[in-house]
Length: 386
Ligand code: PLP
Image (cartoon, rainbow, N blue to C red; front, top):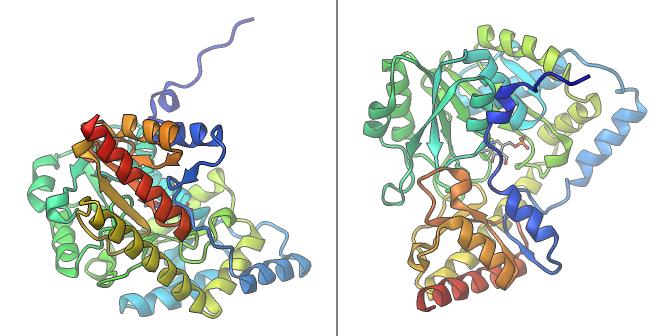
């Protein structure tokens, strides 16, 4: 007997534009991998030890769907201090990384047919989560000449009566831009004028090299839903833990959504998160300095080859301008991989605006970055002359 068709919504959801490069890279031994956005450092040992201890001590069961009270209290205290206004643990939901926190927030806010303003170039998961919700992602451009900061007039031109939410990501993937406080304040003002929610993706908050990260929640904690993660800060991508901070009303809905989605985050992982937040923070500074060193080394190579356009102030990504090669970014990335054995992410994976760019991830080793970026520059030059 035949089967009825699968649901159409996930089939319509766009896939990841980086996957093609990753799959090909895996078939080409010796490839220098600069396409993945994942710290190459191991999780600091005191965090691993805390998890082992927790498993031995019996943290082997379900937790409340919003997370362990002890972890939520820790987060509320730390982020209350950071933001300068008190937070209650009922404003915190522990999630399976930033990915699932963001998706839960989209489900909490968006109904089918709603529109959501998302950065272009931006992390592809926003558009995926919107599509899964049968909502429409509307890209707003981030341009190199604006230092990849959002312009209010671009947002004004794209907001409609159907718009429900504005997504802000700073420090940003894939640009590495860090939004200055006055721009963040103006963006919150824009959201307020249009009665929009703001989803602030703050997963790179601790990776800032110049300037400082400010949460939009500083100006309007009721309106802003902040997505955080331990993945990048503590090199904990595989542990799958993050958290969402929002008003109590929104947090109640998100906690409710956790039940059918994940029930709760692994108890052992939550104890590891407590150790990360409570323990020594030098590991964070050390990793940040390593990324900075790598960034500066890459910038220097780009400068020598006349390909330096800007210096990212945060996260661990850099967009490289390949427009002079005349190749679209997908073709550039695939040929660079086949012909020079270097994997980078095509700009087109992040939206329409970055098709003349490729993303290099500074989360690879210094040696790989030096060699990989030199090959990239040589390939771009050869493509021009060829
Ligand atoms: N937000 C942005 C902008 C990201 O780049 C990522 C990961 O690449 C995430 C959120 C979520 O990561 P995780 O689910 O590991 O916290």
